[in-house]
Image 1 (tube, rainbow, N blue to C red):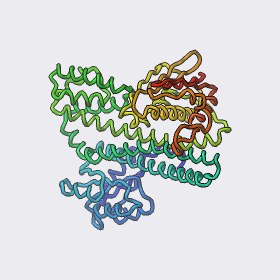
Image 2 (image 1 turned 120 degrees about the horizontal axis):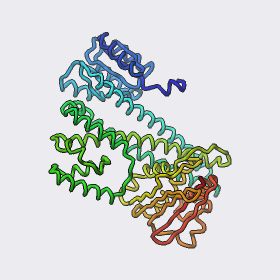
Image 3 (image 1 turned 90 degrees about the vertical axis):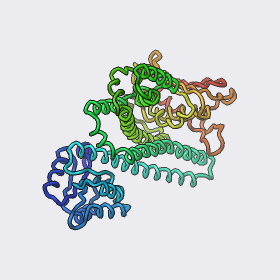
Image 4 (image 1 turned 180 degrees about the horizontal axis):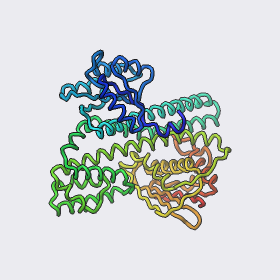
Length: 474
């Protein structure tokens, strides 16, 4: 597949139906929207085609003369090679028992004929997106497992040498770093799976039940929440909720506490006037919950992408360190985006006891640098800060312009660094951690990356406050 094909590729769909008119209609519809479609007139041929070239998704009729759709799906789900392929049943049968059977044999969705074009396109797009994300995740996991196996093998081979033993500890540290994005991926997949299991089947009926105006409110809220980029502390969110609860009570809206909580989760903090018709609707609260679930799925998908990119970058960072003498090309780098990416990956470490205060200059200019390596800097500094606080306290991050430099300060409220240790913390292999917990190379790597950018890093520490200051030239 060449580059142009890769950019336009939307998915390979196998359409199975013994009625030529239905098969032709479905094929033409999907091809019109740039999907690759392979039409097949019966179940036996479908199994042969799948064996030769597995598709990304199968649209499967139920009532066929030689082998029905239930049997085709059952055979596929019994094979580890094909069990992962999502099957959407399309049938004129509208009996609940048949729908239940479709899900029991392994189908992911059920569309009733005559179908609506928008419904078919929406469900095909949703299941293809999930399937391709899962496939990408499996590929990334395979790469990461291979990398971890290679790193562990290196650790075992070089254990006899003191220098190589230190490298072995670094390998163990990298393995730990990879587990963080894998945890984010696992959590996001569980969120997506939960939505699919409990809500997707009910969504079409729900949309048909509510008015067009409320449908528009649902889509507007979902899109608004997905685009919401502001990050607030837990304290600020509590204040927003109190304010919203009071405003809702004044408008005599039922369940003001619950609704305010959902609105804050959606990123809606003010301007209730435009939402009052929705909130007074008998289905208003349910619409809010559905909007939150939809935006949550989209954000989970974005988290998976961010986490897989981050995991790949961790492996890349090790390669970069091993080949530090090789020069690269600097690119335009947004410092705030890099820091926020790391905070996203550490979300589970932050949400149970760490208050994050972000003081960013909204007009902060970009710099020319190596973004992957700078992300490694923010990862190490934030990780060290969390460990120093034992994941309980306040993490303050400042990013501002100071003359012709970008200044980044990362401050934690931990126990502090003893004065006799402070001068040694940037020395390679120096660590106060137990054997196997740290290599002593983290801050040494950070300092090398900063110097590679012609910048400087400083540290100040007293009990209850440690600040790492990074200065990078514009």
